[in-house]
Image 1 (cartoon, rainbow, N blue to C red):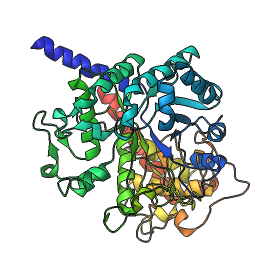
Image 2: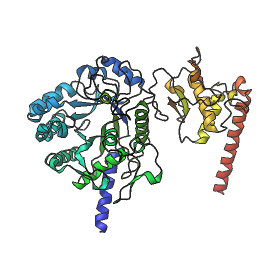
Image 3: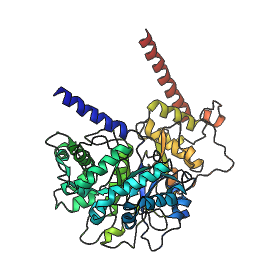
Length: 503
């Protein structure tokens, strides 16, 4: 029994090591079924403006690959399903595909993975028998070009291939597919690749006939008595996404594969639907995608593997008005064809990723969990050498309440950010500030961005935060003096504590 437990522990550790190889990320899928598809250079401009560093293409469009060159953006390309049969039956065809679509562009275009088909087992079952061959042939071509260590090869699966997904501990793959899945998992394990999985809680919710609560699908906070509990493991699940990811891990473990990480290649929520799709709304789409992004970037992990995040690609960058099917099919995008956001994501602390208000309404706020002493030091600097007008935070003034370092530093950070023209480096403050699209104004305390001022001061040079030079105007600022006194008191207390410890 002890040996069995040790083996389970080693398996778990091996998953953690593989999954922790890279920092978690949020990427975006780029579909092209638009009547007015933007030019590749416009697409790349939008990606840059939104700080999107990971994208997945549904093909290997040459113009798009050229536009992405020298941007540093990590790119996943795809062997389209219609090309799969030819590649799966011919090593030379696969080699030609890699030569034309990978070697010709790499490393200028930072291609990191190749999707061989998409949801082949459920949408193109006649190609299932050659899927593993196609994976191997593409990988062999990468080996021949000495690119197999830089570029992973996998194939996105629909979550519907996992049966009895709740409780997750009882999940298993559709056994009729095992003749393909087992050699596929062998391939992923031997090449150090990952399982690509498409997860759509929207469809799970819609098809559950009320069994799945909307809040559980949307990542909304649940009271403990509303959480779903796996009766075998006693793990508590607060959202569909985590339950499906863990179901995939358990399904792989059922086939004795315990060290293949999961990457979610598609997930999202539609912002508009027909009369029979009442929950395809802007508010729900915003809630789901905002919560998903925070869930991944906060490195929450899943109940089975807490702290091991699952990198995810949001479906999708643009609304695709040419998509067939119900209204919701056309409305999964974060942006319209002109690059205007469908909704403003509720994000803070995402390091400007998808701060998607292209009307330029962005704010600089204190980071969640930032060290109060570092915030205080940054606040002192902003109201001193940074030359921010901090009088609005004096007692009796509109931004005095709430009287805490987080609220006050947010006001000072945002004032400096707008004063300096809203550049990225103007919202850093030694790592305790971040850009947000959520307006921090409250009551009569109106932040600069809310007033429509661009805050750009000409001929202003941003002083260094390391500067010790005093300024007569800041020295006469009573609030700045008050803040420095607070900081000095904190410093003295710190020395006293250190002294006691040393004694």
